Image (spheres, rainbow, N blue to C red):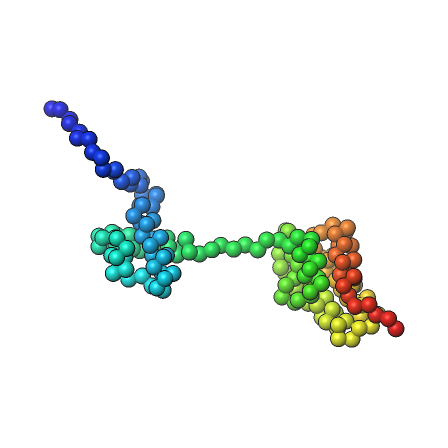
Length: 171
């Protein structure tokens, strides 16, 4: 018996093998769901029909496409470590909730407490500027910087930069 194949101009769909890949129509539905959700705040069956999906495709892929759309819509953000300029700027601003954390440093309770002491000393200097407050502010900042994994030259550079911005006290 002869095996006769008729040539066709229609492209055959590329289907995933082994169940590990996501079906192309599922990917299309996930993208459509993301767009529909962004525009209207929800995705209904009728919306997917208007987007060009059949009832069978919706029944088959809706759950997987919804999970995929959620995964694609979620942005994974990681905080980059502070560079030298960031450490100097944060030390100049002295905000309790923005402590400088260089690379290989995790936020611990000891660091938060040490940074809070520096911020309190900096605020006290602004409220009541006198020479002892200024020295105390630099000493407390130095104690915080000692807990960070930075080189002594970098530590001195931060202290010098902050020293320039502290109010000068003349008595």
